[in-house]
Structure formats: C-alpha cells, structure tokens
Amino acid sequence: MRVPADRFDEAITRLEALGDVLHRNIQVQDVSEEFNDLNIRLETLNAMRTRLEELLARTATVTEALQIERELQRITLEIETVEAACASCATASPSRPSP
Image (cartoon, helix red, strand yellow):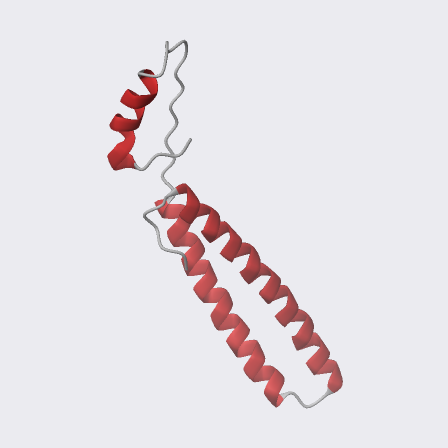
C-alpha cells in the first residue's frame, strides 16, 4: 500500500481500527535521487537524439545514414526505458510530476 507521507499516521490509525494487528511491516522508499538522475539521463539522451537527427540530415552516404538510423533506434529505445522508469518513480512518489 502506498500512502503519501503527510497522511501516513492517519492511514495507520485507520487501518489499525479495522481489526487486531498481528504483524506490521513498514517500508519507506525515497525515490527523489533516482528520479533526478533519471531526468538528467533523459535530458542527455534527448540531446543526443537531436544531434543524431541533425547528423542524419547532413549525411552523405547510405552507409552513414544506416549507421545513424541504428543509433537513433537504440537511443529512442533507451529514452522509452528511462521514461518508463520515471513514470514508475512518479507513481512511487505521488508528489513528483511526470517528465
């Protein structure tokens, strides 16, 4: 169960009122640093994708274009992976906006 920090005590009190507490296991995960790292990585990947798109527009040969296209595909996949991780962090910490 995920509970915003400012409503944690209230949630525990209400849950305890539902019955007898036999065992309690509370875990806290601060995803702030991970979220910030992922956003920085995402910015870097987007900048790299922009540079590759610019290179692709100026490429002189089909071979170069194919190499750049492969790298663009790899970068795009990595961007999608990082965006999914950011969304996961945002879900784990509801006060965080999506990138």
